[in-house]
Structure formats: structure tokens, C-alpha cells
Amino acid sequence: ARAEAWSQASPMVCPPVSVIIVSWNCAALLVQCLASLRAQSGLGDIELLVVDNASADDSVDVVRRVWPGAVVIANARNEGFARASNQGLAAATGELLMLLNPDTLLPRPDTLARVVQRLADHPEIDMAGVRLVFADGRHQVGDGGHAPTLTHALVHAFGLSRLGRLKGLFLADARIAPPWGRVGWVCGAFTVVQRTAWEQAGGMDESYFLYGEDVEWGCRWGRQGLTVAYLPDIDIVHLQGGTQRKPGEAPGTRWIDGLSRLFWTHNQGRGFGLYRWGMAAGFALRAALAWPRDRARARAMSRFARVFWQQRSLND
Image 1 (cartoon, one colour):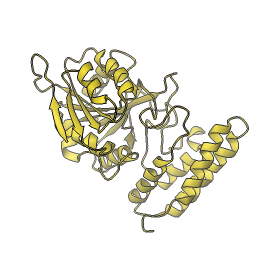
Image 2 (image 1 turned 30 degrees about the vertical axis):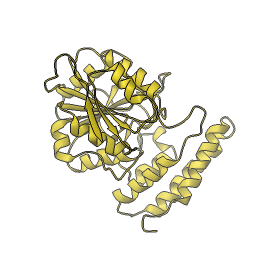
Image 3 (image 1 turned 120 degrees about the vertical axis):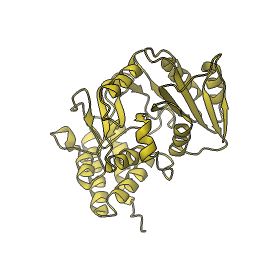
């Protein structure tokens, strides 16, 4: 990788907040994301670092044009999200380190200032995420959740977290009350960490190329006694899959491979057969229930069920 820095008229001196964006063939999304980031107020200087994973489009040029003071790390090949994020974290100088996806939009000019103030008010928080929403304001499942235990996995598979107070893999709704609540992990589309905690616990597991690295990261920090928090009253728009999926394309299944690996390692292989059966049965049931009203969703759920059923242990 090569690092190129384009300096402003006067250099930044240890900015309090560093924002790290990993880009890959997403120039159009970057324009929107950086515009909303540029509109943020109440923070002073923001150090922006963009780690580009060998984009074939003009993503690097977009950053250079829109944010001349950004630090750009241009990788010669696609290093994956975890490794690229770690590159940005290592190069950042802020006391707060923020991972921000290029397919996100900050809806209010005080969004980041509110996050920073929340962590200043609650210094016990080591890692935090926010409420992710679709462009129409609907909550986006997957912005945070709990450790991949067998109970959490089965509650998620059968949709039971929506019926009561049972905890699943993902936060099903806004049950967590402000100002924050403890969770097992938060989504890598927006994650803010304290520098001191990152120096203690380390970055993402680079053996995950994409999907699952944020879950592993949060759970590992939790096991080390650090606090992972969800901020339920601060929203960020996430154009989910905007950097990976073409419009109209069916949801992929790569996340299932990451989740199954997470389950295996978190539980040291125990209960994997029941996990595989339960996840397949749960998504098959979801497919059957969705079929009369939403055929596309039913087909997606059915595909998920088949992939879960085909999963094999890491010993195979």
C-alpha cells in the first residue's frame, strides 16, 4: 500500500476525531457520504482517512477533489474490510476513531457531535454504534446485537425476538433506552472507539475478508472486559449493500459463512449441528409465512435456509 496525504494550508495537530472510510468502487456513494460529513458542525477539524481497496473507478480522485486534506491509503489490491479498517485505524491520530461506510449519510449536521458528546458524558463506553435506518427512516436490523450463542441464534432464526424480551443475534427493535445500552457488538458501517481501548484490545480480525468481522471485534472486546454500547436515539442512514449489491439484485449469502464461522469459534464447535438445523428450519418457516404476501422475501428466506443446511463444521 502507499499512503498519500494532501495537506490543507495549515496542518492538523492531533485532531480529536478521526473518521476512517474503506472504499471499493463506490465513487458516487463517496460523493454523498463526504458531503454529509463535510456538513457536520460542532467538532472542529475532522481528520479523514480513506483506505481504498484497489477501486477500478475514480474513488480516489473523488476523495482528492472533495476533501483535499484527506489521508488516502491506496491499496494495490482488495485487502478486504477488516484489514483496510486496521490500516486506517493505525494511521489515524484522533482520540476517537470512527469507522464510517461510504454508503452512509449523516442526516443532521450535529450527528457526529452528538456521538462525541455522548462518549464524553459516558467515558465508560469503549466502543459504540448508532441506530441505522434505511432512507425512508425504517430501522435496519443488523446495526447491533448479541454474542453468537446457540440461544441467540435460534431466537433470531425463528423471529422470536420480536414477540417478547428474548435476545437474538440482532437487535430487533428500539428496546434499548437512551442514552445507551450494553450490547455484544455493533455494525461496522458506523463504529466509534476510544483510542486507549483500541490500543489495549486491538483491531479487527483480518482473517475475515468481509462479513462477521464487526461481530467478532465487539464480542472479543466484551470478553476483555471492555464496554460495547448502542446509542438508540442517534440515527444514521445506511444504504445497506450499496457498495456490494447492484440495484434489484437478490441478497447474497456470504454473511452466512461469516456467521457460521463466528458461531463455531465462539462456542468452540459445541452445538454446531443444532445451530445448523435450527437456522435452516427457522428461515424455512419464515419463507413459508412470507410466501402469500411477499414472494421475493420468501425466495430469499428459502435460499438462506438451504445455505444454512449445507453448512459444515470447520473440522470437515
